[in-house]
Each structure stands twice: as C-alpha cells, then as structure tokens.
Length: 144
Image 1 (tube, rainbow, N blue to C red):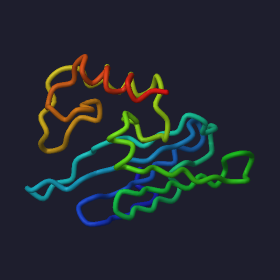
Image 2: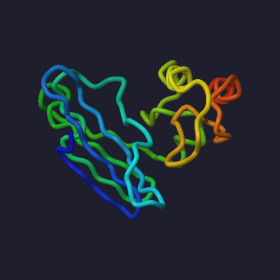
Image 3: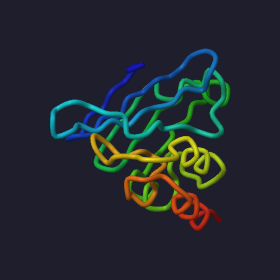
Image 4: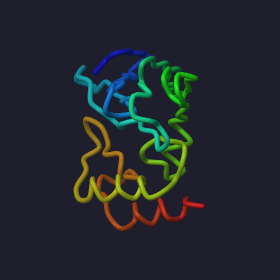
C-alpha cells in the first residue's frame, strides 16, 4: 500500500500494486474538515492481469487520476485513466471507466445508511446519504 502517492489539494491518489497475486489497484482519499484523510473509492480495473502492478505509479490532477501498470500485457505496460467527475455522475461507481455489474456490486456492498461525512459511500450514486434501490436504478439507467 502506498507504492506511489499523488496529492492535489484535498485529494490523494494512492497506488497499491498488489504483486504478484493480483493486478493491483489504487485508492482515492479526501481530506476532511477535521484534517484526517478518508477513503472515497477504490480504483480498480476489470482487465488487469495478476502481477500487472496497477498503481505502481499514480498521478492526480484535479478530477483526473492515472495509474501505471508496468507489467500489464507481458511487460508492455499500460496506464489506466479515471475521470472522477464523469465517473461519479455517470454511474461508474468503481471508477474503472465502465458501467457494469461491478458498479451494481458497489451499490449492494454499501446498502443502507451512508453519512456524507467524513466522505460519502461510493455506492451512494445520488448522494442522499442512503444507499437503496434509487442508487441501483441510477446505475442501471447509465448502463448502456
């Protein structure tokens, strides 16, 4: 955890490359008004190979996150881009660039009450502090 860290204002992208038994991933953290940092979302891929080392490098600028994966595709390497604004508004709750079953699983995993502080639950698509059928419907509506 923390193989790479990029901070922009009150947000931090943290790489966790998970070698060798997972593809790796990243996390987005936000600073609260009290000065502590809380996890907002885990940044995952759906096509990362075990040992790809997604998150070996992380870069954050505004609402853009880039995670490097130097050993994806048999050492050819890859980079994974996450548009935080577009993803949150479009039903991509796990920020992998797609709206699919994994986003529905985020909703189901966060089901119930979800206070907005210190940070909202990723499954609270409509940001009403409660993860319920409306959030499922929001993901389904955005799903192509």
